[in-house]
Length: 344
Image 1 (tube, rainbow, N blue to C red):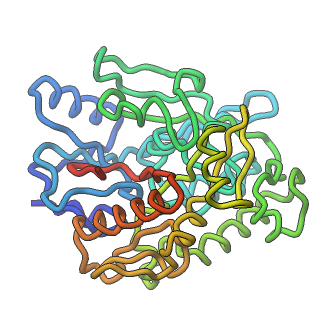
Image 2 (cartoon, one colour):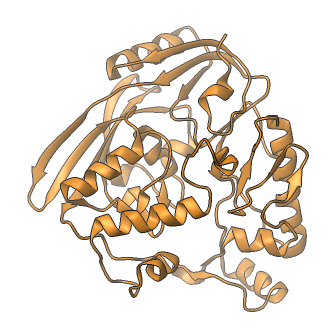
Image 3 (cartoon, rainbow, N blue to C red):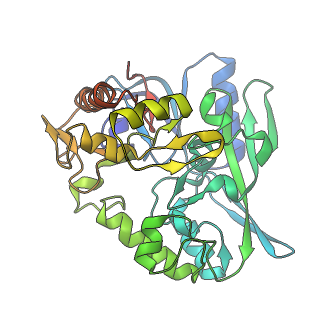
């Protein structure tokens, strides 16, 4: 019996009723299609870095994606890089920088597999994968066909996508990224990164330098997997930065005049969730039993000694969410995918 905690960065999650690895896209499609025909509940498991699994585990078939392969095609001033879903993400970023492919260097150090990047619309330090994704190949469980979806069909928005909004429909098989043939980074669009690099927002730097700076920033927040650092036993940022429409933004301004924000189109604002959490009385290192907020990064909830349970983690998440809502009237939304549990 496979314990799913062994396959998640949190180290949490009970047993799978059945567990199998898919090493080719064809095998992955076959396994999913067969399970669907037999009405067997199915969980597609990637790197487990953005996943919180119930202590009871998963009463169905868990398919771990272990497909491999990278194909490169030149398209004018871009490289079209088609990557199988089971490839590790950060080695791909490292290769892109080494090869002179620009556009994902600020996504360095993010754990997980390529297949999860379009689902979450993975982003950090001013870059989102939706900016470079050209096409996603997926198995459509509704039509029972393999489909190639252009970026505009993927419904990308902040840390969201059509895939995430209906996790039961598509199984990502491969992703094609359109990366600029350049040794320079994309324009630096994140204030903290610009400060670390010593440049102004909107400038570019060598992509390798951008990657190194991002890795330094992430390590300082315990956001690069390191077995010797208990703060990395997490699912990354547990809450997304809230995007508030004008009315809600005005209410927050009344409660917290001059709070930090990023201006968004249409009068909306994005508010740093870390600031809300800290100001609501939950500092770095705040502990509830065996789980705690990271000592380096307020957005990460950690299982530092491996002694916690999923129930412990959810209790801490609810405490933080409810405390922020009570003080600021803003309801934080979890970023990781929850399996067999919810955060009511």
